[in-house]
Length: 83
Image (cartoon, rainbow, N blue to C red; front, side, top):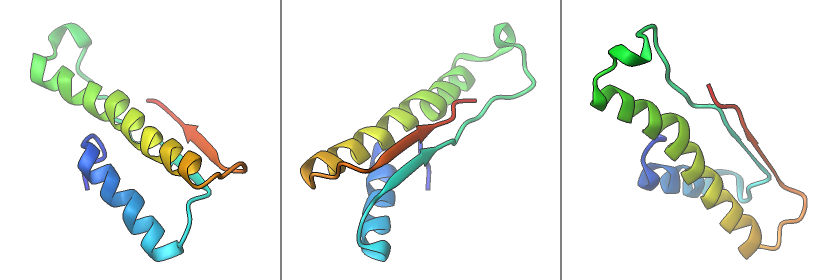
């Protein structure tokens, strides 16, 4: 599972719903960094950081929020811990 990819996040939500029947909270804390100074990163390395740390969190949270709204969940939580 690659949480930087929207389709994988859809699968994650669907698997959670299949196994547990509902979704009450989402904790997004996937993130990558590294020891390389930012000015030394190649553009593809930088893109990987953005995809994981920002796009992946946005994707998962958007899917969860849509689920909450569609199912009128009023006591659900999103927690995001960005690296």
